[in-house]
Image (cartoon, rainbow, N blue to C red; front, side, top):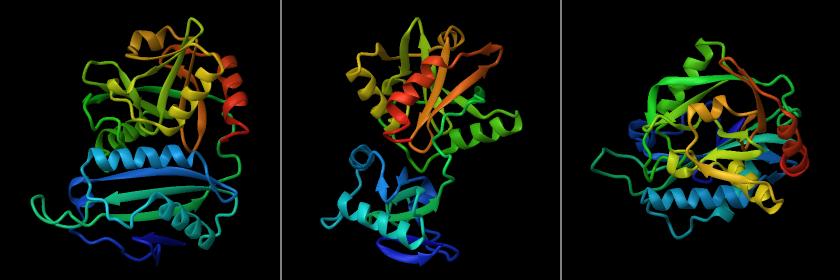
Length: 278
């Protein structure tokens, strides 16, 4: 297997970053997780729009020769080299160069990793997920909360909590005590026949699959709300599902004592995910 660092292919089993890398030292970076299918980057435009927005918000100095078209070309070249011919997973990481907190940081660096995915990735999960809430962290509702940054500590700890408690995933709260998202996904609930998802002002990550699905649902006339979602909303929901770029939709079967149905979730999967980005 190989990785690509700043456009140069390197063996994946060799060190490629310096100890002074600011992403490693300070979490001073961004990342995108993308899905490949038969040589295509699924939802490519949405991924790169989010990436460029994140670079602007974090005040990266963007070189003149840096472009999303060049990144897409390098991603597909690496996929071919790694023999990712069907479904694949790409992680694109960007860092603010090397140096201390008050020095360096002027050279944008990027690392591309690529692996094959099982053919069944993205299929509807008929068994459903078991989830709960991570109790020990709160996400701030600020200009950075919607970004996918290298500072991933609350999600990392929530994932450890989920594993220790035999859960499939954990919900993360914001500072108001409402639901933000999960360790690797955005949250949707169906309540009174309305689809509801935490807004970006509620510290939800600006998920690419979330954005795609919101656009498609609204075009199709589904009633959709982006707003604060409380634990009581979750307990009163009839259906719950999670979304991300790799898995598409994952149905949640149970939250604590609540057991959810999946008929509308399956309808949404079949209509908007299965053939388009599944």
